[in-house]
Structure formats: structure tokens, C-alpha cells
Image (tube, rainbow over all chains, first blue to last red; front, side, top):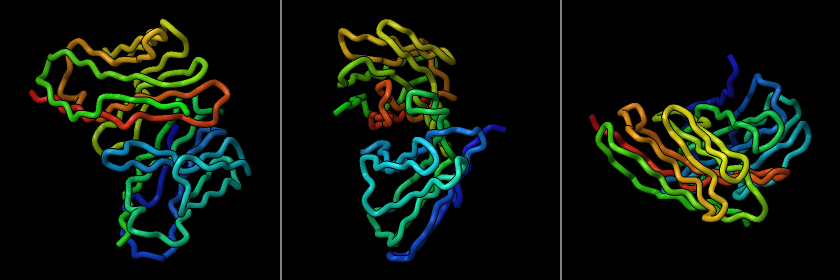
Length: 113
Length: 112
């Protein structure tokens, strides 16, 4: 089954404790991205990747890192999480570019205390 | 920069009511336009899209027409069902761009 998986689905952590949210797709997609969803603010892009080893900042990259060492994986790294990073995070992928249909993961609910 | 403005709601309708969700955009050039839907507890999924002026996208009884003269892409459905309860996002992307720009989303609740 074609899908985007994220782990963990739920995470409660404390300020400053490094964490990684994994994202993996099995569709051989080139384009991958991370979004955060917050009430009243909608969906905002954090980082995106056009292909392996090619990543770039979205609209709200501060406090986040990403890597794209393999085509299928695009982990999101929070080196020192803060409470303002409490949010619902989505990973998405598409064939080659944003105009192609985006396939979203199920989301990761992160709470930073 | 490119942007999308849509009705934010929340909106509550009765089953079989008519639905319109307004979406307007600001963009240079000729963007592709999308409606994505997020059902409770799930990620977003594509509902419909249109890639050029006057194109009509349709899916699951929903329709939207790309109107360049009014820079709009309003979503309509003639008769909503309880299963249409979800958050609806309008979005755009320019050909050759590396980004997809979303509106803030509108929560729809349909009561039996």
C-alpha cells in the first residue's frame, strides 16, 4: 500500500531534550516536506526537499533541522525543543514537485513542556 | 509573495444543505489550485485540483472552478453529508515553484 508513515504519532517531552520525528514514504517520490498545523494559523511549511541531499527552508524553519540521505526518508530534528514548538506535525511527499498530488502522513502530535 | 485567503469558519450545516467555501488567491503568473481535505484524526488528502483558467475540478460531489478574472477557486457541493465533516484547505503552487501555499483551513461540521 502506498503510504507516508510518521513516528511517533504522539510525543510528550521536556524543553531542551533533543528529538527526531521520522518520516518515510514507499512511493519513490522525489519531493518531501514538513508542515506544522496550529489553530488559527493553518498549515505552515517548515522545510522541504526536492531530492536526495537537496533541502531548503520553508516559512517557519527556526528551531528545526532536516536531512535527506535517502530518497524514502526525511526526518525532522528538534535539537532543543521549546514550548512554542508544541504543535501537530505532518510529513508529505509527491512525485516530483509541489504541483503534483501531495500524500500526507497521519501526523505527529508533539507537546513540549 | 503568493498567498491564499479562505473562509475560516467554523461552519455548521444540516445534512443535504448547500455548501460554498470561498477561496481567493494572490499570485504572479498562472498557479495550479487545489482543495485538500482533512478528516478527523487524519492527514490531508487531495480533494480536487485545477491547473489553468476555467478548468473545473470535481470529486466526491464537490466542484471548484478556476476563475482567473476574480482570482478565485470556490468549493461547492450541492448536498452535504455527515461524512463531509472535515477541515478544508485551499492551496496554490506555481509551476516551477518549490512550495505549496495553504490557506488557514475551514472546519465544516454537518449534523444529521
